[in-house]
Image 1 (tube, one colour):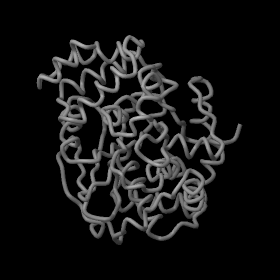
Image 2 (image 1 turned 45 degrees about the horizontal axis):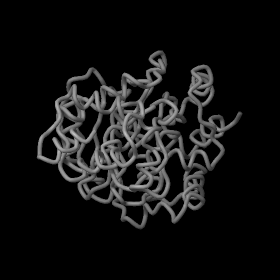
Image 3 (image 1 turned 90 degrees about the vertical axis):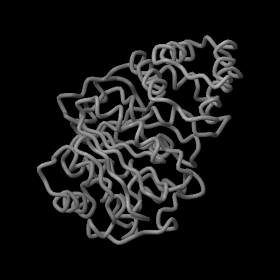
Image 4 (image 1 turned 180 degrees about the horizontal axis):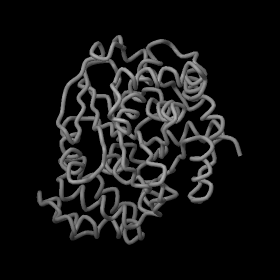
Length: 329
């Protein structure tokens, strides 16, 4: 690792195969925590290249425990995190709204690193049991319409660096990788990113795939549709900037999206929204993200129809029922 670090400190970049090999070495425990911390820090000091990101992604997918859920044609709603906005768990709640609307969801997630409460934190607090048992995962898909793929159970590399990432408390390239390395490789995906540069990297990589995808970035820095500003959506057919009003929704403020001071408060907000007792602004944000996920799978529907489906999922209690089935043993 010393040679690698010296090479990188001289402003060199890695080839795709080099990046792949190094990440495999990290996953195998070939480097000590100080070396891994230094390596991660390099990519805080400069921008990651497409080849480097692609190589890291290749290694993660080669090493992961795969789960074949293609028969369900699921969608994943997953953000990179790292926007430092301390929002409530928008994509996770939206995932249950999508499942309540009758679609299948394969949600990939992890504990929060640079946030108060990641998707794994809140679900674990609320009673979810994480597993990589394929039979149990498929059972959840059949009964609840959703499964949760807790990243450390499927990715040796993420498990190996988890303590280091927690100690650093910084955005690393593992944030960038998260949405790309869902072990079920879903055909449909909503990816939230925290800056425009990363959206371009994702667009370059995703346009080479056969996925149905939307890459989302709110123009004021959120890694999801926040409704605090206009938001950019990139897909295989191009990109566009949409305002909340274009979708018949009112604008929000950062205060409307507050995620709580700790996991307990985050969980309370989570359940209020799922129970249909969230504020109108909270519900609108969840509905907007869920609607885009529905549209990703059923693109013959209008966005208006998808918004109505998402609203009905919340108001009818179907989203809550999906959550209750998901957390039941």
